[in-house]
Image (cartoon, rainbow over all chains, first blue to last red; front, side, top):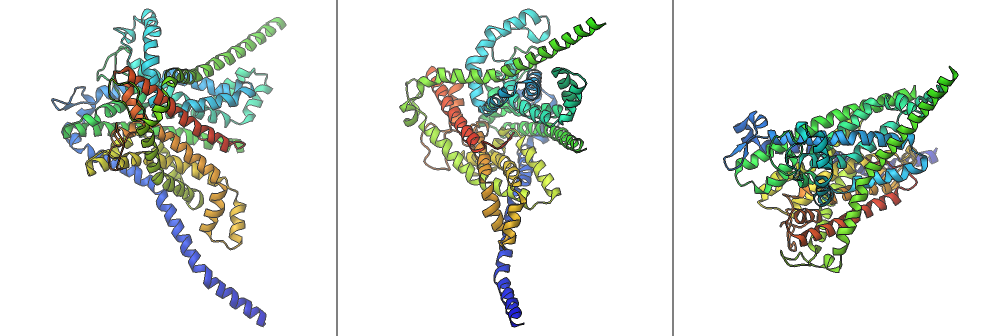
Length: 327
Length: 286
């Protein structure tokens, strides 16, 4: 009886000694981490608000015409973003045309076709390519890639495809095509590694079923794996597109930086990101700076839309493949 | 009939081999730029990476020699500033997602972090320009560090969450059962167990922003001399490479190659450290 009572008293006193302090500590820590996690919400609001705020005058002055006119004349204070939107879209499209087949074939090779000993070294090399800073690829682009393109592939393209409007006119080197190629190199690793994850998440049952029916390795890959993962691969491509649209330094160094809309890919172009990089510190008038902020807003809008689409595609594929795997 | 089936079978075999070959060639093409960039960096840069490069300020136009010591130190200062903000926010935010957040809040926060990771880095430069440079009337190391930290936050947050979730629940239960409070359990048991992974995430984020140029163009701005105050413009290695690369001088081009070789070596060293840290564990950080 007395023992029990003393234990009770002791326990009670211990609880009163310890509990409140630790509860305060717990609450404080939880709130602290919550505040830090909410940083992502703050950042999203901040980026939208700041770009909107910074370009409000330009939006008021130029309205919707900003997106549809193509004069970019800081002296006359006429600003139209169309050549930059065009340049961004075309260079990204070229990049996708080059990078998508290569990346998906590489991902298929890495997960399905390659002998096992070659896989890990290849993956490591591709991760290293992803780690090369954009400015260094640009440096290589200026001094190695562009002169080489001008010397060999461009004349060939002109010779055989010169009858199309895309490969006509003088070849200076810095051009829309060079920009597209450098972007392609930059997005190869991300499309490859995301595609690889997608292909790896395809359940083995798929492959086994195909092999059991007598499929060859390629048939199993095509019928059982690639077509099964179609949606996820599309998501990987869109994710790559998001990166391509915002790529800045390397493109700025090889695309030629001329705001024009020309059919020929040998002609220089300009992208949304490069015009900000080149002209931001030169913007002497308020309206010029405002126009550049609005370019930033347009770029933000496009990349967020594209990334939302990618997230949506990748999210549904992972959940459905997971549920299917469970079944 | 039998012959035809055999022939068809051979054809299918050939087709399979052909597809494998094409895929192999694609893989080769993907890693070709990497080897070419490496090759040219060494060929063009190695000659100019010498003692002067690491100890001298940039030489004036026309004068040969000179170095990039101010840019190397500047980059380290910027990384320190970025880490001072980005690491605590990212790590603690990631801990919240893994330890406290409800499924609903988490999916929203995770989604927003992924959206932030997809935003072009130059946009952060523009935002910080409006937020800091315009307000305080001048380019500064603080502005550059802030721009880099904003890029780091969502990166570190996601990797931290991922590795903290890998800590087995038994560890938490054992600690709580001993009467250790929840926050102490998280700090001393959970985060300590996951520390290798958390450090990996931090290193990868540092390597990533260490090579960023676009967000620094109009925040840190660059500086040909030593930076004496963090509220003044500061040099950074990637910025210096960019300025030298687009200049018309051969001397500067050589310096740009040397700078690029040093920067790539630094970035790859971090990646190798990460690889050693994560050896034996299947780490997939996109």
